[in-house]
Image (cartoon, rainbow, N blue to C red; front, side):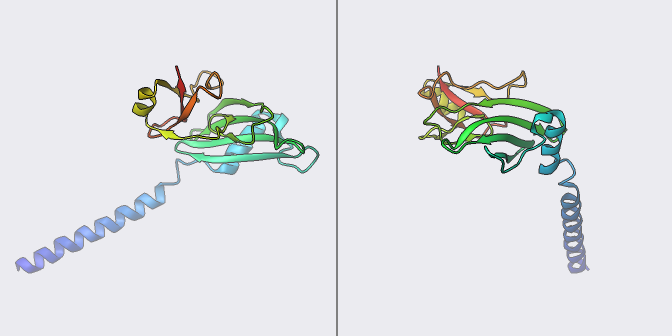
Length: 175
């Protein structure tokens, strides 16, 4: 009789595990915002981006990147002599709130930018933990501070790296 009890307990555990997995998979996408919905919301809130993307001269494109709690979206004005003329970056959270991150107005040597910070990607970008940032004499800056456009480092030389392991899109800047 004890052998049968053990089998029933194992069978019940397996059934509960399967049911739990099905429930998780069925509900995991419900709090997630679709990329197309995030772009559509921004085009509604900012009508000047209604014609993006297009192949007119100069071309205009949309870049997106999935974040933990929503979508990073950049409306990019591309150039012919320069890779990028400018960009405006936003974050659309899963609760459908929109935050402006900032504008990217590149200098001649800037080739690409980060959608998360709306700033030039440094040539020697390294990932740091918050403790490593502080140890290098830097401070952690949340580029999505929720109080308007995010902050960036005062100069390219002050940028020490991207901070990982935090829920924000954070950078490390020399104090």
